[in-house]
Length: 98
Ligand SMILES: [Zn+2]
Picture 1 (tube, rainbow, N blue to C red):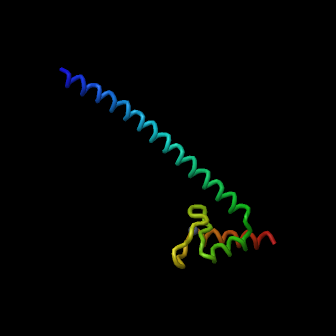
Picture 2: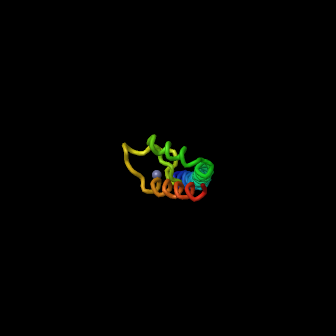
Picture 3: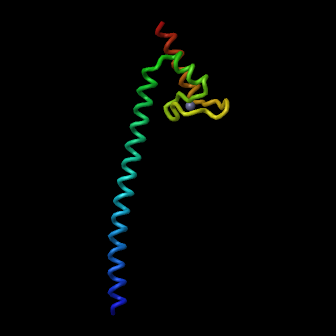
């Protein structure tokens, strides 16, 4: 009987622990989502503020300028189609504006 009681207590403790871990995981997921959204928003704002020349230079220096990977290093001379398309769009806009 004592062993059964002991195991029941252990079971209760594990259930409590499981609930705590689940709550922590949900919290971590929420924070990760928030931080991802903040980084994306900041990148979009930086891209919107930057001029064509600054973006073209950043790309030439080996960094992504597309929203998905903004400011991350491109792997050795790897071309990014998103960056390319974005630069092209920017160039066309700049030419239309002038
Ligand atoms: Zn890119």
